[in-house]
Image 1 (tube, rainbow, N blue to C red):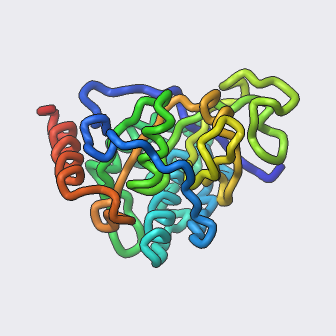
Image 2 (cartoon, helix red, strand yellow; image 1 turned 120 degrees about the horizontal axis):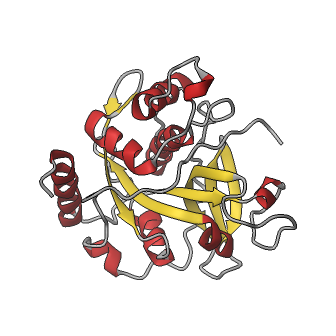
Length: 254
């Protein structure tokens, strides 16, 4: 196994954090397939081989994937992800004792308020949470906004190579390995054995939907103000609703 680190702390829902349930797009039935074989999200490790910065690496790779859906590429460097990790979690660069991971809701809150700083620009997301048991909602996020930003509880059995599945020999207890942040990018179908393509650790990994159902602890949809939308499935009304919900949350008035 190549050098990889975990780093998603247990899911926490902050008071009044944005949710996607009120958006018109969430009332639909998700497509039965979401194939992106011709689109390279160009994922990068972004420090997640030496640091538990998966929450920051996930955001950096979300930027990369969003731009790929629009037909171009945005540069995200290791230094950008590590800087953001330090800013959003309290990690102090060079001090391993402070490399303790991040809470996804808090990382997203920091990004919405302060942005994700790149070499030449600062990108600001708006975001909302989806019930992690609502796989149709997750698929709608993937089809309408781009990759879903997930927190999962990995099992020791997930250390084995190949497709992640609940039938892999070994300890299948969710969380027995630890928490991790990754992105759900595409899927071949919606059956329990159908494959989902995930973005993690600088590459693509496949898992079954039954594995996703077993491991997921949180799901968020996000869109970047300067890159939004990656495709045309989110209406202007939904965009405005999401922007207003984020503004109210950050101001404490929601």
